[in-house]
Amino acid sequence: MHVTTTTATRIDDVPEVRRIGVADLFRALHRGWEDFSAIPTQLVFLSLLYPVIGIVAARAMMEEKLLPLLFPLAAGFTLLGPVLALGMYELSRRRELGQPTHVFHALGVLRSPAMFPIAALGALLLAIFVAWIASAKLIYDMTLGTLGAMTAGEFAHAVFATEQGRSMLLIGNAVGAGFALVVLALAAVSFPMIVDRGVGPAVAARTSLRAFGTNPGPMVAWGVIVAVILALGMIPVFIGLAVALPVLGHATWHLYRAVVPR
Image 1 (cartoon, rainbow, N blue to C red):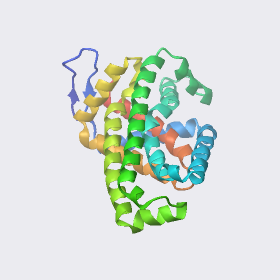
Image 2: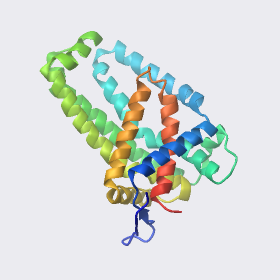
Image 3: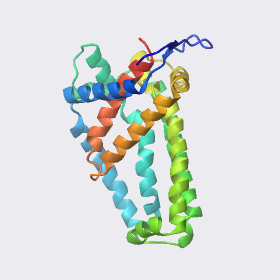
Image 4: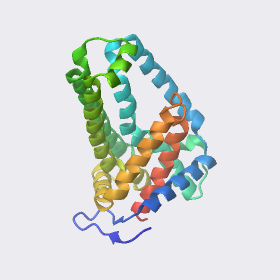
């Protein structure tokens, strides 16, 4: 339920931000599912995702030194989610306005004047992703890496059966959660706002940070919901991501609409 409205006072071009509740999160998910049902894009996501996933997985299995990075790469994939969902924001925007919505309209965002702020914020998320992978490698080297080279089977056993493996899981998940929290605060509404209003990256990022600061509980809850849905999507050999990613993309648009008034 919308309770009150907080108005930006420091910077004129940062819009007001509403307070939201948990009910707004599930409303956004419901509307995201409605958008996906009206504009199914799962085949597009499958055709884009599977070649990349297959190449990374094959390389990791062939090169033992890449094996420890397989899970961090999969988990870090969520850090780039706001960029990957750009087309879904555009489709939801068009559907909301009553404009034609075809899968190919998702590519329209790539030709819009908003590409510079999108690229700028996207580069920031990519830098965070690289920092996460570097941190994951350092954590592995300090924990499980001390046991020496392992095959895939030995590695899977050592993760759960050794003290070093359990330390790696504990530290890695804590650090990963920190990175995810940073991205959530920066990108919760920034990319949909750029698609919607064509604002600059600084304004979009400040609005997203303000939205997070105004709604810390619901925003953290949203991050948990996103993480759970993506984790479930990864379980059946990543096939579920072809549905989870577009639904979450559409839902993020509606979350933006709930937080930032027209």
